[in-house]
Length: 325
Length: 200
Image 1 (spheres, each protein chain N blue to C red):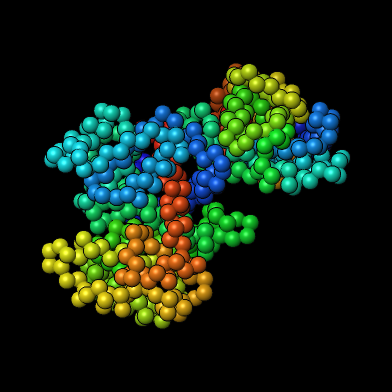
Image 2 (image 1 turned 120 degrees about the vertical axis):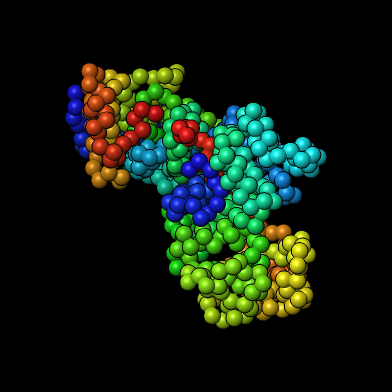
């Protein structure tokens, strides 16, 4: 594995290897001494063209726990806001000796461009590109699901296992969500069934025709039709709702009524079903406070698992010998 | 020289002797923790702990035996394909103030043990660390020595030593293969089957 750009091209064995490695990384994070010397002398650049706090902090923590040097490069107040092109930024990073670049960009495909243009030799990790993909988020979701629903007893991390036969619903703005964009292929790769719940206006073209995904237009319908093992509530991205034609749904109240997860809907799901949310949450819009703070909610755990998964990705990309191009 | 250096009975005798030596050196089993280095050090550590408990019933073999993965502390990570990370399990009581006996199958350059000492440093502050190995094949690259040795095995650098254990490989044996003159070719022809970290 040279880059981590999307989950479409991520092989099943590589995905499981990342999850297994993340399990060992998570174990090291329970110790008193949490820093490992593994990536000493390596430089990781966080290149963020879009505001993000949690993803950047998570990557920064992951790199620092592995003793890599971290350089944060964000659009605000840097040359990026003065109109520098992605290419010139890449050449600069190459000249500074970046071993890995964690990139978040508003344009879909930016990470792929950075990885395959020949501008720089470092490893590229996609931390979200436009409405396309956010692979480490999908991997931390899968890691969290596997821990809760597959692991148990002597092997809580469920090492080596996938998500075979489990059913997960992804609810909300599938059209603009890079979290959904990464989760759907990864869940399919790992053998899980995917149920998508969204208003017709927020579904990508062609998704309703796909035979390997069940599509519903209200949450009640989906809860009725499937025994869900987990439900992932996507954030209603207000900033994306107002642009262009706007009007993806009539009103926030109607969205909540048809797609919001509350205690009442939760009680109609199987008792073991877990609740995921990539954050930040709009409490009262896509998820009620009761659901967000429910014992079956794993939302806070997703954050700590995020550090372990990103440590695993950095380790697997950076620790081994440099493969010839 | 190619062939079996230690058979199952030899291995049993060596481990029993080492168990006695550990108890003798430490004047009992007080605060003793046996840690195996994956892969094949772990079953060896369990066998040693069981033997120690046979001699001194006060020693809890399960509670005081564990595994210490050293992958993330290696100094050759950049020279090899990415390695899978093994599991580290420690006694619930931790290792502060304990006497740790590290257990590995083949003692070669000493680099694995250096990494293990670094890993231990991050996990706590033991009172002492000792080293038990099944086979010492020489060729040290660091000033590190073993406290307990199953068998001293003079080797050429080009030879390889493979330890097979019942728990992992289905059979107890130590094999040596390859010769000084044509070591390279015989190394290439050795099967990709269970291979200990003899060179590391």
